[in-house]
Image (cartoon, protein in one colour):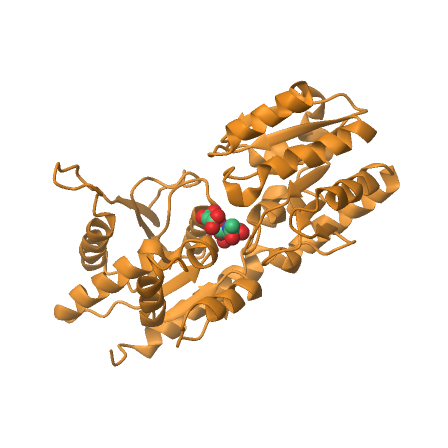
Length: 379
Ligand code: GMT
């Protein structure tokens, strides 16, 4: 198939999922066209099966806001015509599903049918999308998509709860490439980060308020009072400074490493003992799954799709959002006994196999085939 993929090209989970999906689809023989405003961060392998088309939005003094949707829908029309794209898969509803529908209508005028698959990722539904400013347009574009997927049962449920949706929603979960995580622990160069007696705790996110980064710091503060430990924080975002100030206030700045954005997530997870994800809401928690695939147990909040990934008492623990004490106790419980820690690490890795891309990517292929086969629908 010739497949167009629209996503955010940043470090966010939805962009990562779209990029890994495109790369795997290309390996499986499909021709992939990424259409977005920058080359996606994990897309370092352009070739005869993987192409990137940049959406440009030139500055113009009259525009207070640059009309990205307009530029995107125009670029979609041109790219679909030029490369004979058979199906367009958009990741994150806002504004991608809306721009895709506009492109579809423009192409229809020229007798070209463009089936659209929309994947809902999280805040496009739970935080941003359901805001009254966007809700009508998001509802419209989900209902106008030829197929809709959500990355967890929880997100599917939230979509029906928050919007008036007439379409089916298929749950196709996020995935990881298990092969990438088959490293041996001796390769990890753990000694560079911490002495052997210290445990390494990790948090990866875009450090936005929804991630509750100050909870991460407070949980770590409680842990290091009981167990020698270091905290690795990976990512950039609006709450980073707040986190740094809190570390200073608590006197633990020397025990916390802020890495910024990193393309070396696998290496950092390789030497981690525990992953913290105390988010306010999380439709899936791809970062937690990546940690588990590296054999790192997860201390998380019991919210959204996280319990579909992290199994309480097996691969880590789940606590109520904001229950720092419970999360700290659970972390200390896992870390304080070597045999127990090893068991949790083993369980986390085993659990991650369920989400291997070889189980998940064929579900997208099947959905594309079905959507193309349906042909144009009455609109
Ligand atoms: O909604 C966001 O935070 C952005 C989005 C992204 O682009 O990173 O994250 C969401 O999509 C990820 C990939 O499907 C999920 O793993 C994250 O759980 C989800 N984030 C939230 O629901 C907060």
